[in-house]
Length: 131
Image (cartoon, rainbow, N blue to C red; front, side, top):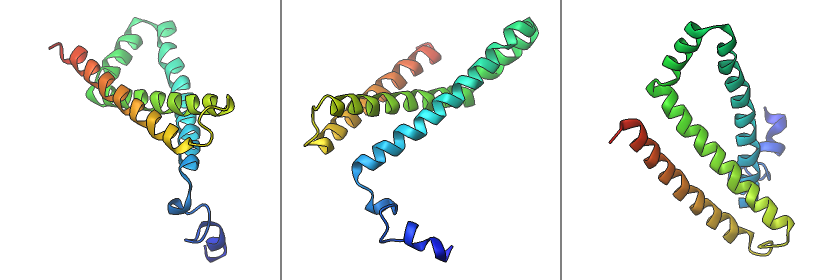
């Protein structure tokens, strides 16, 4: 581990406190992209239960409506919003919009994403609880 100190030590660019804000958004985009790709395979696996029969499908749906999976769906929604907001930043920067003030663009998109997540969470809670 001592040999990697130059790579991950406090004076390294890869030390979390030394990363610029744009790097955090780059990491968030990559991590959420992997999460969404893994979810796609899990989703296809669950849908394959339709081919097996009604019993397997009913068992899968009973599991998917548990509190744990509702919470995981909320986290998935958060991953979708983060991935969307960081993707929007990439599109804006590629178009030459906000390149000089990228920190402001990231903060505005982060606030929009947080508002979307809170609103979607409230709407989902309203739909799930039925009140």
